[in-house]
Length: 325
Image 1 (spheres, rainbow, N blue to C red):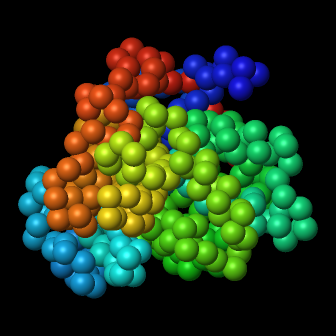
Image 2: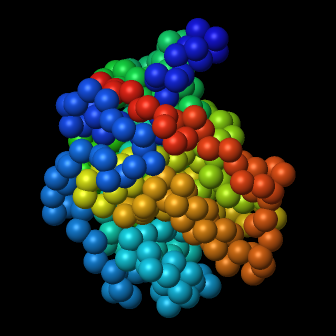
């Protein structure tokens, strides 16, 4: 660990850095969403909301209740949940597509593991070290290396297609990949329930890394009571238009609940407000599936207090540029 942790201040953030996307040197502190360089994202990010965009199959959710819970952010959030006890799913704002930021790292690792298996071998020792940095600490340099080793954009896109992720478009700058909440929830379903593309051991390996994400990055899907079994990967990216993109994917099991969940959002005024939004959705899902309001002391904050933000989102913290493969 020591061999790379000393570079953490310059090498670990939770999403693709805007400077790298725009080809500029450095950017201002990430709290200032308005300072992000303008990057045109095109029509694939268009969002349509309303009942027709949602999918409901017997779960105790309704668009009306969700919109009330989200308030003024109702049009800027999408989530998809599957109750593994019943197999039923619910997707809110299903036509919404967003840039993935670092949640794409799960798909990158899935692709790499699959490609190596196809070649009759597992990950190398070096690749395992990079995978741990990529998933547990959201290291971008490690991701760019593994993205290339997995075969780049075409290979990752093929993996998404093979898994049935029909609304996911992989980009060469991997953090600007576009996706839907239902596609990301489907990816988690494949990791938890099985897929011909991965062995049981491969799936357990990926979920184990997601289950050991550093505590300060365990919000969103991980905003559940301490002691719950959680696998989670989050992503955050300030990108114009639509400001902070805050996403979270994972699986949850405990206290009579067993589900997969993906949360996407944009137009968050800051990273902090976006993280709070993801926590709100996660706790709403937990409470709704359990019929109670007991999501008080979440795993990332065992004391029940507010988690100390990581250094790269504190006011005045500089965000270093990162090369994108």
